[in-house]
Length: 163
Ligand SMILES: [Zn+2]
Image: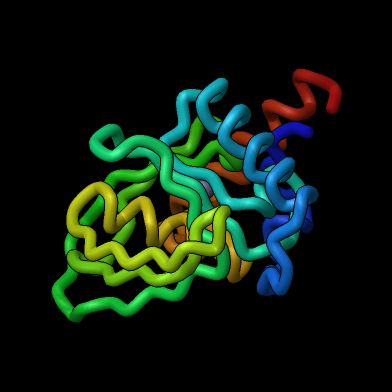
């Protein structure tokens, strides 16, 4: 398993909820955390490793690794600007408008209910990962100019590297 990068179509898929948390799901979660840490990420969503299922993981340093299956978020109105990058969009960074407070619900890998209220970096990270499950990338949220510049650079880069 590896990280799928833009414009891989898996990143555009609306992911399916998980109905049974079996051994396969445990394996997927294990692979996700391995890949996230290997790449120094603070969050990862299953579609980023090619699995269109509603699983996100994150670790912004305070509480260690958190896994959330079938996450649902409730947002408040206050916004802030968060500087974000994404493991699926190499060499891209953009200011993204996020909600300040997020209330996250779901279950962990042992089917234990999870309820997290987050703000700041963790809030932005959770919104970023849940966006992935809807097929939404920070490229879609960045300004049109930033997106177009990135796509142009990516084409040049790929040509150079013959991929
Ligand atoms: Zn991402």
